[in-house]
Length: 58
Image (cartoon, rainbow, N blue to C red; front, side):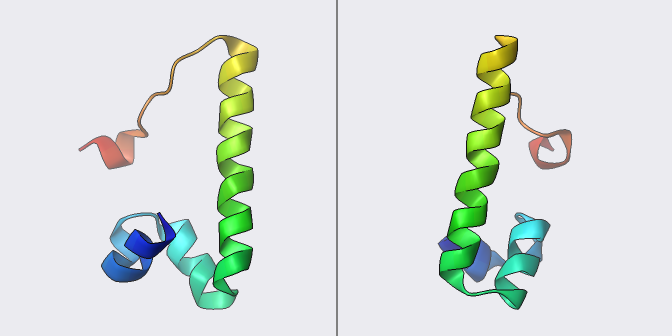
């Protein structure tokens, strides 16, 4: 995801490209892993399936 965000810019994941502009790549990788872990934990706790964000599904 980080490589894709670097190549394709702000349209893909704006929060990630903004973070990459401010911080080193390894810091962004840890932040991304933390975000994904939080999403997985929330899905497991609620017993839900993954739903693509509306802004990216279009």
